[in-house]
Image 1 (cartoon, rainbow, N blue to C red):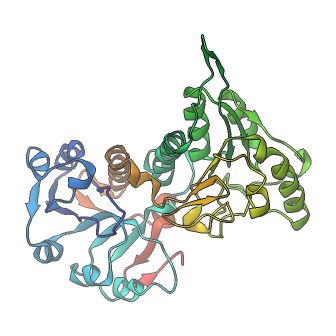
Image 2 (cartoon, helix red, strand yellow; image 1 turned 60 degrees about the horizontal axis):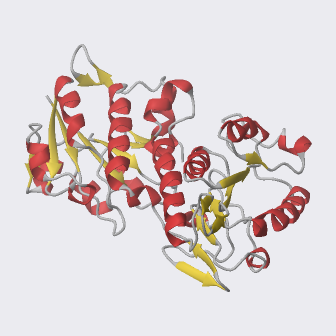
Length: 373
């Protein structure tokens, strides 16, 4: 029997939970005993009774549960106090924000904890059902458009009435990754006129397949603008100047800007300067999904709505947590699919295969050594 513990999130703006009740039977079938910290799912809409109905145990003594658990899962990384209470050789999974200077690294090594940073799951076909960043970004893109529609003082679709015609909102999405594509699709469903910009020419076809216009201003450069893993590269200074000029022309023509542009392991690119914001129409809305990485908009601030000369710049952090029920459900499914590849199903035990690309890429601590840092 493998003891699995789900911890309650302790960050102020984190409402998700790492395991939802509907996934528990899958763990039981693999030979797990599942324990949930008291009220871990309440903020995501899952009560203790929901977990008990699926034969999970509710822990009222988390210190004792930590000492007895083989695998610990949560959304955000646990603090050093929690890690110290884990048993030697335990496995911990979550969005661990791997960093060479993190204080928890020493504890991982000392206790020979196998720590898996799930944000490092590679973008390969076999990993798609384990890709937490993609599933969470999908919901973030959706929710961002709903927030924009709420904050915008006009309607999204065109409306023809006896009193006259209401023109549709114009939405520009910056960054056509998972969040951006979902934002495009959502804005289109709400009836907006949508365009999008991305430094990767490969995203042009995806954008256009959703019925949006793709903004291109230097096609030759765009052909070389993504990594082998499909992520955006940091562009040259010359390109950035051309980009700023093109966006300076395009952004003020739109009512809603959804910012999703990120570069892995680097600050988010600044795409909307104060100068551009001051050219935008009053009552325009910017939603900056990149705010936690520095932001795509110059004036955006974490967890604040800035009103600059009539333009609202919204910088909510942890966007998936704004829709916690579905975000938790997708996170939970991703984690289960990941744990399955750690299982020796015949013998009902854990086997960490370092030759597996998904496992080796996500491990940041293993048998007293740091990895991938």
